[in-house]
Structures are given as C-alpha cells and as structure tokens.
Amino acid sequence: MNCLEAQSKIIAYIDNKLDKEEKTEFLRHITRCKDCKEELNIYYTMIEGMRQLDSNLPLSRDFSQELDDRIDRELMHNKKKQEFFRSSVCIVVLSVLGFLIFGYVNFLNILRADEQARLKEAQGEHYFSDTFDSVLFVPDEEEEMLSINVEKDEPEPGFYEKIRQYNALDQE
Image 1 (tube, rainbow, N blue to C red):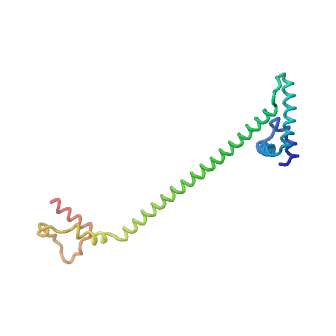
Image 2: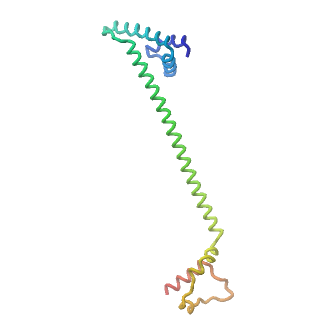
C-alpha cells in the first residue's frame, strides 16, 4: 500500500469500516510510514475530539496515546491470529505425519507377517522334521522295545504324525 491509498483510508479506519485485509495492510503501512502516521494522528484527534464534544463527554487528555493503544491492540490481535493459524497448520502437519508414520509401520508389520507366512508355507513340515527329529524323537530304551508297527511299503510318517504318535505313547 502506498501513502495515497493509506491516506484515503484514514477516515474508514477511524470509523472501523475497513475489512480485515485492508486494515492489516493499512496498519502495516502506518507503522512504517511516519508521515501517514502523523496524518492519522491529526484526523483521529480531530474526529474523536468532535465526537466527545458532541456527546458531552470529557475530552481525552492524550489522543495520540489512545490511537497508539488502539493500533497496538489491533496489531496484537492480528499477530495472535497469525500465530494461531501457524500453530494450527503445524498441528495438522504433525498429525498427518504421525498418521503416515503409523500407517507405514503397520504396513511393514503386515508385510513382515505375510513374508513369514510364505516362508513357513514354503518350508513345510519337512523343515521342522529334519531340524528337530533328532532332538524330539530320541527313543528311550523302553520306547525301542515298544516300536511302532510300520510296514516297509508305507511312506515314513510326517512330522505332525510323529508328534501324534509320540503323544499317544505318553498317554498310555
């Protein structure tokens, strides 16, 4: 905003008739430009003084201080709005980021479980039989005497079948 635009909006500012965007631009210009600030101070003193006289109110002692206080309040209000907006955006971004991280970790867990299931399926029961037969099925002396009747034509029982037979021997 240039000085001519700012000076044309002084009366609208004093009467609170500027919209949010215009007021924000106007206040930015006023805080930077001493000439426009002085012009605003003159108009504010004249208009507010006349309003107070018309309303039979006692005249203010320091119109400049009142104007500075009003500008400070409005600038602080704008600053708080900006901070609220920034913090809201940060919260939303962090929430989305957290959701994405949680989803990614969950996705990795699902992939790992699926991979483990595929490996287990590919290995089948022969993997466990080859690995654990010597540990799980070491026959005791009594068990050697109670051998399982297996015909030579039948294929060797699988891992789970051996466990069932072993458990059946324990229950007897």
